Length: 260
Image (cartoon, rainbow, N blue to C red; front, side, top):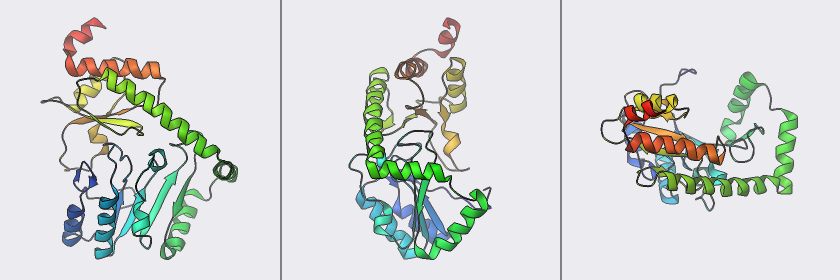
């Protein structure tokens, strides 16, 4: 919106973006590009399989639209399917980053684009960012070449799987969506629970979670839900925070408030 784009939300299922929905949107509207995060999508933690990725590429080719593939979490997913860019390299702008998969302080990413987009992308980068920090780029490159980056990715995977075990233990009996190599979980609220009220109740108890509205385009139908980050605190703090969430879901919010 900041750049003047007209955004249109599309339906998803347990396998990510629905190809038929993209096809229909392209037929009914002047769609120029589709933005998709196929690997552990934020916020629903869905991993798109290879068949679906190939179908998305085919629809984009059929309607001659660009694909912007956000794969910032992809390297964390062990044995993940090929990138959409592998199925449609002539039209995919592939984005990835070191920040989420290695250490937060390494704030640099990479953008791979087809030849026809190089000039436009380089110009936009020059206008908005001027240049990447050379020292950070050098560190990232050396880490890739000497294996440090892969060691950090493997460490992150192990740490995240421990946190997934904590979530499974504390939220036993709660229905939520997660991927074993993901940084967050997606929890649809039961009954008529309102997102903002639930988030506020958690905040009163010192727990920060994100309402589903933060990730929606206006008028996009979606069940009330919250996203819970698994990687931003210590394991002890995570356990305590998830315990609060579990009590809010399964207990009496008013009673809990009086007990604090």
